Amino acid sequence: MSSEERALWERVAASAVPLHPALPGKVAPPEEPALRLPQPPPDPLPLPPLARRPPPEPRLRLDLAPDPRIALGSRHPVMDRRRFEKLRRGRLEPEERLDLHGMTSERAHSALAGFILGAHVRELRLVLVITGKGRSDELGHSPHRAGILRHSVPHWLSAPPLVACVLEVVPAHQRHGGGGAYYVYLRRRR
Image (cartoon, rainbow, N blue to C red; front, side, top):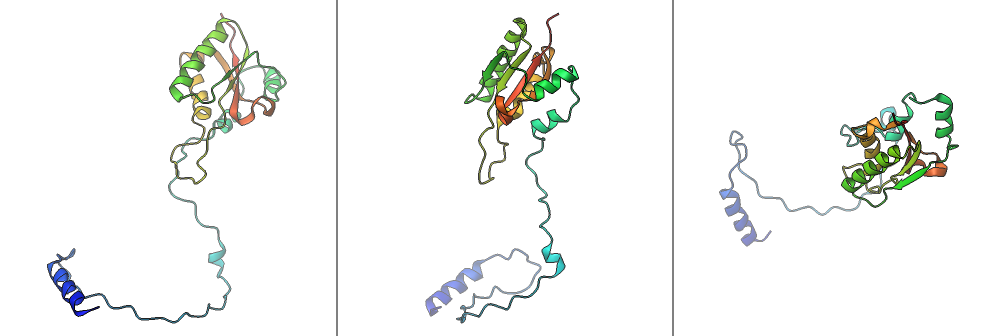
């Protein structure tokens, strides 16, 4: 540092208030960095056994709810077992379809409610609700889950007023949309 820079530094250092007043001492001016010659890379050493272990799981998890396909797949069916297996394997053809692609959550919720209630009034038994798989954040920076509609539709179908019309919700077979669609098996009207 030049003499002017050193004098300026001493004035700044003298006006500084210590963060920890209990610690005695004066702030020392920064030292000039010494020139270092490049060092050759060290010889590779065998890693100790602890270094070979996988890194620990992160403590913070942003995805708190399970994938709805897993949650729906682990439940016992309410409907007839034989018909349920046909449904799950994609051997039953849906009578109508609702495509929610590109809709906002609010608009999709009202469209789903109108569609399910209308299908129930017309005494349809099996309908297909297409949600899409949703966009994913490739970098993983987004705290919200990918596929808002895909995760919300099963919750909407299990809440009033739709729960009174719905007998079963099953993830669709690959030929009907796979991970981006649900079969909704409706109750009979009384």
